[in-house]
Image (cartoon, rainbow, N blue to C red; front, side, top):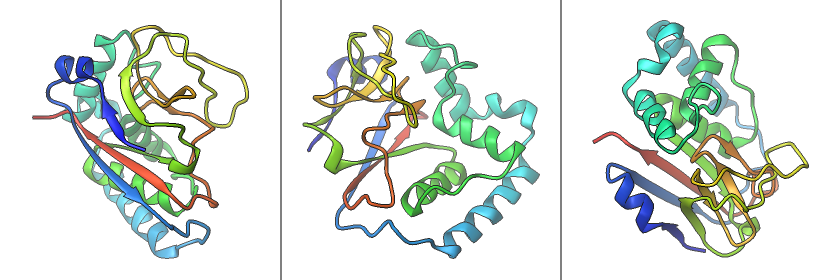
Length: 193
């Protein structure tokens, strides 16, 4: 599997920087209390630092909102992943999923960056960031019915269909990281100069 960014995306969003981490032979099945302690401490710090009414004004989040509007997604309906995480922790506790997801959520919250991950054993072909044709299949996390992206929407996809809609808004159930995941790709995105 290779990670590819289409030329159209690179041309339209030249400020985009993407970091990719490939993890192999992972044991994601165990619970790690140290990770949860780190998250709990970070969440408390963020609750002290951030005003829930001004989350959209955080520079990274404001930039993602501009990008979402640019490709036709209403930011109040389709929240970028870091905005959704920040809003969630300001209202309630962050749920535990598995070690890998918990770690990338920690990184996302700490650095106010969008971070996501996929099980590479479930990806078919290459992982590609591109504009959607609107015909790609997409089964959202925890659901069973197809919700194809809109034409022109920015998506991550592989040969089978959409892996993440609205750039980093919602992941597919098919490639999600689970406790059984042994091989994964973590994608970290920055849109600030």
